[in-house]
Image (cartoon, rainbow over all chains, first blue to last red; front, top):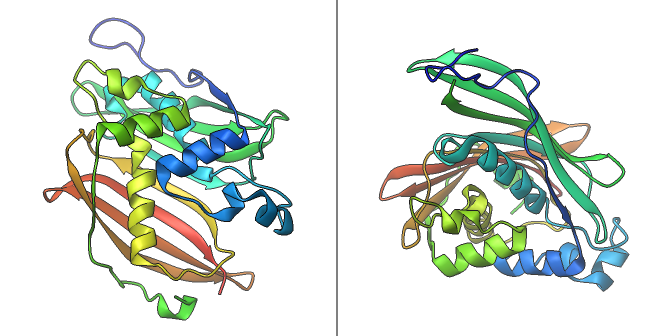
Length: 143
Length: 130
């Protein structure tokens, strides 16, 4: 779809810029301090070992942060100014795992004012390619 | 708080949180992203700092949660950037309760405002263990 600037706007299939991080217990502890969420399943290895998970797991909202970072890099200020993100938490992330946020444009719909609503399928996968969180992000941008 | 105590429409008093540059930096270092502090328009919070102040509001509103609850899904609508020094007030409300496969779920709305103006709307669905 051509834009008012003459350049191509977002197209279905466009990839979003991936964001990746290897999660350590230190990463999880740092997120706990920053967020105030000290649930022992995240920060107490002895407690977590006795839980059904058999060990500590990262906060799900840490992985969600990577999706938001990816959308912010791609859409700029349109992301904090009207972005929508909806995800399901599918699988725990354990220390030592690498989480990668990826996504692509799945629909582009014109809206008022030479802008378009862009829907993206987004997910975080672990180092085995398994989805840990997945969902949809929507942003309105020039287009 | 048990599942049967959580009736749709139940709302809790607003919980205030003042966003500071220190809190944004600590969050940014934890998630590996300091870009919002270096934005041309001036420092702003990461949109997902909502995960911090909305969950704090949730913990304050519902201090006695059963162990074993599971965060199932999360939705955010970001209305505008939040700047250091702004005080966000979040109201937690029960939207819906439902039971699937003999498991109980609660969907909460978390509405965050600065001086009455919406800044982040959240929705969180939780498996309620008791």
